[in-house]
Length: 302
Image (tube, rainbow, N blue to C red; front, side):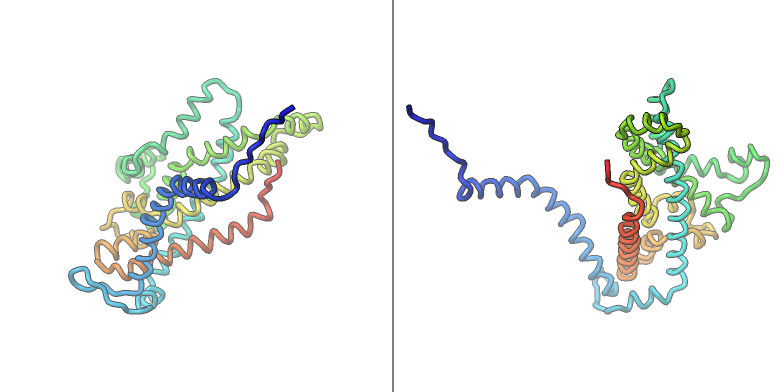
C-alpha cells in the first residue's frame, strides 16, 4: 500500500516573501494616504509653528516666538475657554439625549424605521443648510422661537446666550448619528438578560441602568470620544452661525476659528500653525484622560 505523499506548504522563501508583498500592496494605498494627507501636513504644521511668515510666501525660523505670543494673548486663552465650554455644553447633554433617543428607537412601535431615518436626517444635510435654517429659527424679529414665546430674545447677538444657541444646533446635528451608533449597541444585547431581570421583578427603569447602560458602555465610550474631538475642533458651525461683524463673536470664537482668521485672513501662518498644534495637544490630553478614566466605567464583558 502506497501512502499519499503529503507536501507541506513552505514556511519561507518565495511564499513568505509573496505574502509580505501582497500585504504591503493591500495596505499601501492606506499608508500612503495617511502619510501624504495626515503625517506630512502635521510635520509641516509643526515646522511652520516655529517660523514667521515673510513676503511672497517665505518663512524664517523664529523658534518659540509664536508660542510665546500665543500664551501671552488674552484672545487665545478666551478662545481656549470658549472651546472647552462648547465641548461641555455639547458632549454631556448631547450624549445623554442620544442614549435616551436610542432606547426609545429600540421600542417596537409602528413606523419605527421612519423615526430612525428622521432622526438620522440632519447628518446627511449640508452644514450650510443647517446653519441657514437655524439662523432663521433664532432670528430676533421673525424667528419661530420668538414668535412662539412672544418674547424678543437676541439669540445670536447676546453674549450670554449665543454659546447656548450654537450648542443647541450642534447637539441637534449630531443626535441622529450618535443615536444610531448607540442603537446598534442596544440591539446586540442578548434578550436573556432582560428576561432574567423581568423574572426577578426589575422595572424597565432599573433594567435600563443595570443592563442597557453597562452593556453599551464600549459604544458609549466610542461616541463620547468622537463627540469630544468634534467639539474641540469646531469651526464650520460657528463660522456660519455668527457673522464676522457680529460684536459678540469673541465670546463664542473657538480655537479653530482663531486659527482660520490668523492663517487665511491675517496671513500669519506661523501663529496659526502654533494654534493648530495647541489644539492637537489639547485633544490628545483630553483623549488620554478619557482612556484612563474609561477603565472605571467601561465594561467589555459580554
